[in-house]
Length: 413
Ligand SMILES: Nc1nc2c(ncn2[C@@H]2O[C@H](COP(=O)(O)OP(=O)(O)OP(=O)(O)O)[C@@H](O)[C@H]2O)c(=O)[nH]1
Ligand SMILES: [Mg+2]
Image (cartoon, rainbow, N blue to C red):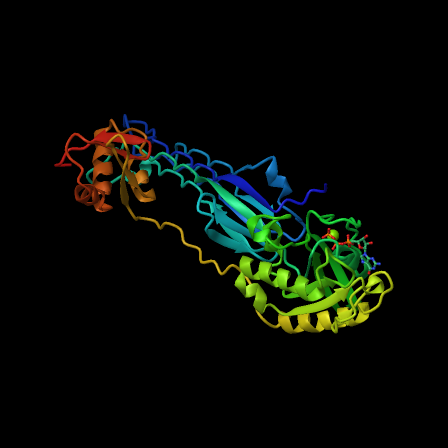
């Protein structure tokens, strides 16, 4: 089987920020000059970028981990660390990013160049030069770099096609696409020959072309997992137009009208809006037709009967549909923002402070240093962490975690 993969899980890790540096200037007659520790560089961000040259999600199936570079540490003489390189992960056009556990859509990368931040870079820590104040002449601490965000995401590819060819198995869908485009799908006289979608480009004249998708055959009960199930209907979702093929020769004794019933029922139970999609219904395998009562457009991929008419009508429908917006998942992207703080409780009774700014406030090089501890406490108070802990009901003696740092809470903090 070829490498068409249309769903996968991917693990992304942004780069850590480099640590800030603790350093003091060396001066001839002073034992300790002013602080001159430079900042750490920011880590690299992981981006997903839609790329028309990527055909499937195959690359992630066996190698799901992607990470960006870390930032470099700061050093003395106010030298800042270099930032880590971003990582751009190329995904096919039409890739939907979903939350790994809830499957809630997070982003929709439709067109070449569309990009989405998949993992947020860790910021570089500030060097001790930044902590110089009137009262604090010799700051002996700096910030650690922040960890880059790490998470699992789910990717689903929903092919972008102008026309999706829908029909029961063995009605001639693949034969049709191979007749009108350069696509070379497997064709055979048994159901479920096609196990993955095939794309083909139809060129009608110099300035009109359209992309057709041959979708694996659908049967009644697909919504309960019969046949190949609903899995491939994902690729119908974004087609502008549906071409419904009804076998005019015998298919399991189902008349064209009965076939149409089954197909519309399955489409509708997958996504009701698919029933609103413009569609062209044609009869197939007309050269060996048993049915004569069908009064729609009759086609035969064997003799060519009705093929030019079918393409003509399709191009008209596609042309009309192109002036409308492409159907998307309509995703809005929301991510936690900067200074917000939340308190959560673990099973062991300890508490956890969630929020980037709070974690940053305690990520200092040396919390045994009095100045550093002072700074951290002030920052936590400013951010409302102390108030939030209070409201959450934290008592003296409880253990509180903030990032990698844990402390015993005292109510007069
Ligand atoms: N006589 C005749 N046979 C056809 C025609 N179109 C397709 N066939 C035959 O019908 C059989 C099924 O064709 P496919 O194109 O594989 O059908 P499909 O709809 O893609 O089937 P699945 O992939 O299994 O869903 C093959 O043996 C084809 O050669 C036609 O117009 N006339
Ligand atoms: Mg087929």
